[in-house]
Image: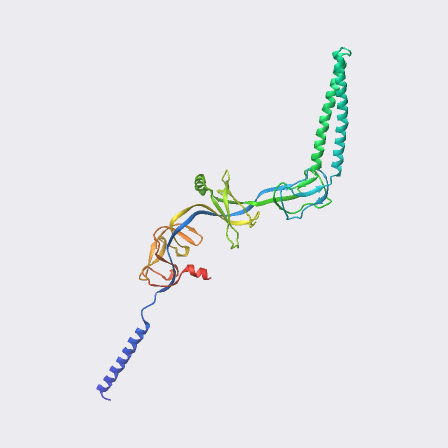
Length: 374
């Protein structure tokens, strides 16, 4: 083959390779952006709140004891039962006290008769002493006898009243509306007066929720409470998706716990559905006020670097800039921004590890929609 022919073949091969190379580059196209999730910065009203862990406390608790000694002849409820104020709970054998009442009433009747006789004798001697038919000393003796008889009658009346009270103690009634606990005695037990409790009753409608907050929050709580409005307290039950129970702040303790630096608060809840229970742990949210026009972003958008906290803001050309922000607080999945963002801007909420300022991104969706889908 001639040299010129060989040169022509190499030129053809080179052109073919160049053409193939150009075609492959066209097929690759421009580089794609980094896939990310993004959300829009919004402006809304958010609560100013304090979160804590609390537990339920009975609104009132009564340990029921017997005021008299005797045998328990009847129990009129089952343990764990709801009772109303005045419901009969226990009957102590009333027969000894009924007998004591009858005896006291008999003594009263006897002494009343003697008092009437002494009074009649006194009246007769009043006439005689006025006529000087009997000595004054004898009249004074009858007057004394009459007064002693009247005092004895009053003493007997008091004894009758006391016997009625003791008989009434044989029928033990609930002093409050509430729920009974574990029964500590059974029918047939002989009990002493004012000895061990027979039953404990907890009032759970309404109910308290106790919780402690850092002492740094005390001044703010007192300031909002002094403004004259009731501070709302919400109680969230663990693993319960039916929503929070609503109550109001009704108690601030009169001293700060020196060992923990916290102060005890109590919220009162109607508890109409009995979702709250004494001793039960709950998540508590104390709402002090609301903040209008707050700038809010998803909490996962916030990144922390050497210069502080920042977010990746997506510009209209789908490139990102790392913008410093001033965070106020985080409420659940929302973060309140004091400075650095404005409503309507878009921020990256997932995929930040592969980004640098100026990098191009491809938005695959939002973290909010991903959370709803999961």
